[in-house]
Length: 490
Image (cartoon, rainbow, N blue to C red; front, side, top):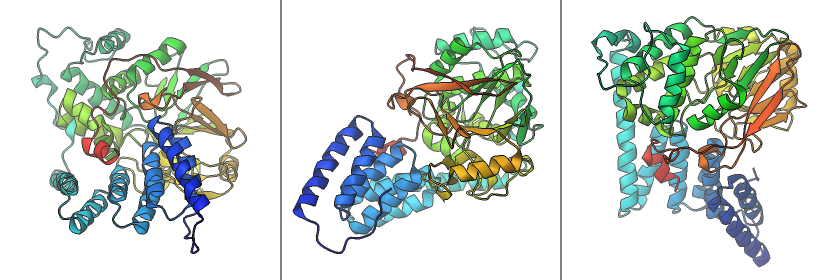
């Protein structure tokens, strides 16, 4: 990001004109959803004229669209510093705060706008809506304290749930997932039909019981001649998930998979994705693996659609049970003691070992710092050393950090996901840090390819398969997302 230092002297008319031209070009790229290109041009405009609140405000919303919440927050704050009357900057800072789960800070921004602009009806409405969210969350927390001994999975009475005669969908056999069930489930979902809630609950209860017995770092053994597949973010893009299985074969004991977090949110078929993946987990517990992503968390699910989708397709109780299940997902996997796979990335300290990861108490929402947070949120950077995260959570780590970690732990390389890549993958840090992202044309706007990695156990050499998005029913991404967040990001 460009320096935000003030220029004390006057800005030449030529620079002012050039900056406006850059801003106009950036606005066009923004309209075409080319947010990285827009950021680049807004940055150049800021270099010409660092006194324009609008340039920082526009760069802020571009960063919001890329989930760079930390950068978005910084830019919105700078815009406010330059022009305290620039209302949009408060909205964008509020959106960044809300995306990071800091609802009370968002409320403060709206409160300020309503005070300085008491006749602004839009500001009043946003303040009221945000206040409702803050009160609702406070209420939920109060209830959870009162009921902290209540285990949702244990409180569900499956025997009381009736399978109606008209239900024609897939059925568990003696309460168990079978290959017949999963195959029928995927076909049923392609027809946009819904799994019966009794079976849905049973899958969640069984998955939770299994995951509770797993360590925070799972060791995976792959035979020398055996194939292993690693997939990145799916983000509720069910029809693209089906395409992965079409290209690479269904999961089986001979065709094991690891899905590396962010199964849900954004895409509007998240329920279909997660029940398909959890069904395979129960069917092949030792050959199908799932890591927790930063979107398998309450704050993300509340804002980016999953909680709304579960509530719409089922009910609030099931949404709460998902939160309970996600708390038990493993945080990382290690393949043949040589390749570490996690959703986000490495750490703000050099002394972290695999044993430290194994010892993490993961049954909770991620804290704002530490090993668990960084496994879910961190990103690589090309520069040496570390930097504050562009997301506002976790850290950014350079090639020297990666090398030190690998040497300390006797590893060859790391695989992570968490970031959209145009080709579906990226090889960084001299081949030691690989990103794989499996949701093509992310949110129906980004135009990126998806990718997955295959390797054999003997050399663990990563091979990349890329693919384009496939058609899906006319349900837009973010259809179940918090409408207030979408409104802030306009």
